[in-house]
Amino acid sequence: MSSTRDIDALIELMAKLPGLGPRSARRAVLHLIRKRALLLTPLADTMQQVAATARECLNCGNVGTSDICDICESEKRANGELCVVEDVADLWAMERSGVFKGRYHILGGTLSALDAIGPQELRIPRLLDRVQSEGITEVILALNATIDGQTTAHYIADQLDGQVKLTSLAQGVPIGGELDYLDDGTITAAMRARKNI
Amino acid sequence: MSSTRDIDALIELMAKLPGLGPRSARRAVLHLIRKRALLLTPLADTMQQVAATARECLNCGNVGTSDICDICESEKRANGELCVVEDVADLWAMERSGVFKGRYHILGGTLSALDAIGPQELRIPRLLDRVQSEGITEVILALNATIDGQTTAHYIADQLDGQVKLTSLAQGVPIGGELDYLDDGTITAAMRARKNI
Figure 1 (cartoon, helix red, strand yellow):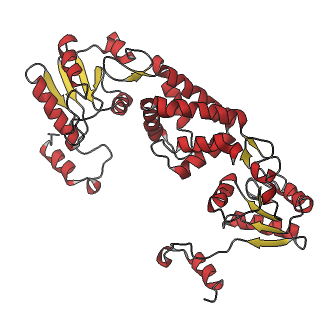
Figure 2 (cartoon, chains in turn green, purple; figure 1 turned 90 degrees about the vertical axis):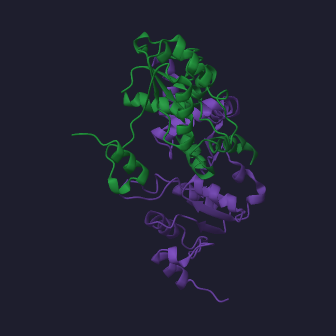
Figure 3 (tube, chains in turn cyan, orange; figure 1 turned 180 degrees about the vertical axis):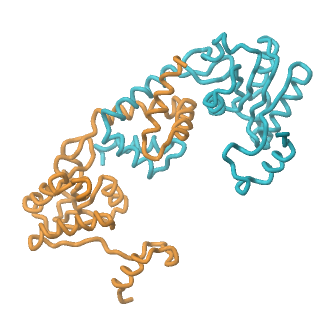
């Protein structure tokens, strides 16, 4: 079907997105064609815009449209607190909660012997620089509670030991969580870190 | 965050696709930004292309890039068989199987008293025209095995009664299907339509 080549190409590209397979990509493309003015054209324009302007912040690794991201540039956020996360998605999650008012540092992954990812492959040297140069007083290690995440946290803690206050996120029962559905590790952590009422 | 406005807009638009919510849209957008040259730019270009060229076939309702689609134009497919489906996605599913060599007619939905969709809202008048003008000998009603689909099939069968051979897809056990997981209706249909070995 030569005249539908573009449509087939679009389906193939959409199927490469995480969370979409060939079937859902076809469904999405049909939806896009039906809502051409409302969705397809704006989406194409915005993608072109983002492709032209998106870049990594040279300082913290956040995704934005300038060399230094808004968070790094904002004077309001220079409160001496630095939150270390694995990924831009983690930064977004923290920002949605609105609880943290300092700056971030995105590692871009975790240390992994299997995948040959050492400190140089991550943004760890830059983190050590920043702690010195930005007058950081507290580094919050907000890495995922996975084995790789915790290994990375331990490595960074070793590197920064004695230079700065080091903290990590509390572990325990999530808000709205039901004990019956929690894994043993979480219950153990919550029990050990129990607090007075 | 003014400088990430485009990225936020992209997430918002992506979240409107079927099968994606806010969370998976964020994941998809991060993936797109990371694979800018390989995925984001080609996707934006292809979308623009499709937005500019995609249109409905005036004859059958198929989606393509010309006024008359490839299937309607192909002389090879003028074998007198017309397969009536609800939706473009159904046509695509039939074409993937490769079993049907005739032409299609896409209704664009099913009759529905609740949603006030009558024959005029669907491509039914055009179907009746085509049966006359294209020398159709067999109409295959390949509508979904839902109540609305079957109601629509009955209505069309009434309209075409006596003019043309009318068939519908066989009902029974799907290939690879396990009896234990099939619903009662399917087993009943398969039992009633049982065949000699």
